[in-house]
Image (cartoon, rainbow, N blue to C red):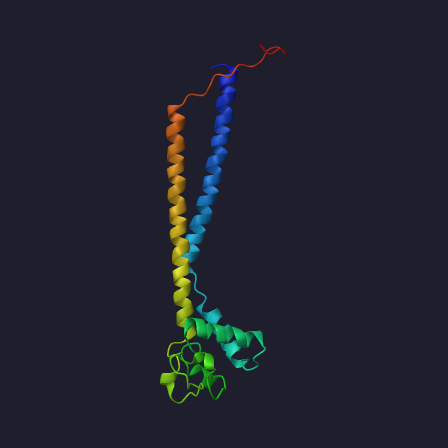
Length: 175
């Protein structure tokens, strides 16, 4: 083996090393995302923040009040665990965002609870988080499968092709 073919082989191995290094970095990022998706739980932190927001609820121009109302309306839920959380926070009634939309006469009174959403917002948020993290996990699995397929295809083509024989120019003239 002469010097030029040795140099081509060395360059090829260098490029192959950096390609495989990049694939390994991507694989590690995907694996850590998948592990995070399988083990992540924010329940305690969400519960603390939601309880704080329920205590501060009241001023309609406050961003936390608007956020609680929007959350309850969009997820069709009331309170953290259920509508009785509004009693615990010192409110005498639930906000109208807790009212089921089919009841036009709902005022948020905690007495006749059939007018209010029965399920709390925390279980619905956890369910939504699970759906999102499941999608992240399956995207990581799909990306890994595509990376492995690409590596196999590149390996197949590299085995089938021969590297062209380049000649080193010995003079300054091109012929």
